[in-house]
Length: 398
Ligand code: ADP
Picture 1: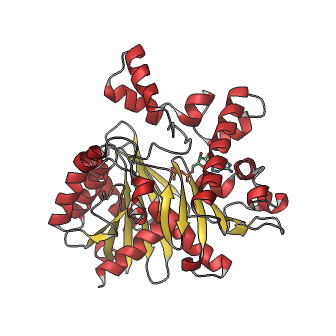
Picture 2: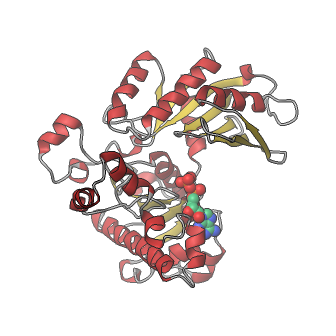
């Protein structure tokens, strides 16, 4: 079956068409600047060069039409017509307490998803828009929602309840949910292959370091703690997000700078993190380069790695040990500098890198630990789209 995997943002649609039998990605791409001037579709078939198409893409429905058109086009397409698409898998950021696993989308599920907008106003509305757009364009094709939160569903209350009045959890569902679940789960499963032990016998720490970043403690196959919380803002420092913060700071800055709720939200989500500290960039590759000459970029890099190290150490404590630490996503897969700095001086806890192996590991599965370590350190490229496609097929063919 050919599965179209869709990940909708406010002004973007990322897609990938996966052949579920071979697990080959036939084509992938992204529509950017939806609803703005100069919208653009970037499309890469697996066997031909990338193409870029510009157009007037006013909304997500038009964006999905563009995607289908290019997937079926004579020159750049990978299927003859849209009837070859057997199912669509949607990445949905927030599944709340309701969804502990992926689910076949029907009217009742759509209603639940709408009720979750309150918990994830920055993310879920766009995911819903993407589902609606696909339903309009691909009539009668079964669709599945795969949640970022689902893998963390079994976290124990002592990890997910905040130190505020308990009634707020009851009333508004304020608790830690965790995100990037498909990625944490995928790399944990790959680690099983690399370590030659079943998931039920392993204690793993998985660090997903992309533009957003989170780390998870996975004890015997279950996520028992993770750094993102009620929203994807908490935890590690990120490209433009602050991560952990004294909440009183927000109230203080809102009062001093006379910020609205929206402005305060934007400050923490869009103008903080690597970008806010360095004043240079939210992009780790640039930060690492600039850090050689620019003290603020160096500070941003140091804060990033220091916080990561603290989380790694605390999760070893949370699980009473660990068998492996796994780095994934753009930064985790590619930045030997971040991996080196985050693991520095953790040898007393059993983590030590082999410098050469670390330097050589670029976007490939690799064991980068020194020979004499108790805890293995692995680099594992993530593949969230494949997890979404697998879950989709499983639910559709049931
Ligand atoms: P997203 O969360 O948007 O999917 P990615 O997983 O693609 O993001 O990660 C993007 C991040 O990965 C950026 O900060 C980028 O600079 C970083 N990155 C990619 N390659 C490298 C590299 N060679 N060295 C350092 N950082 C890198």
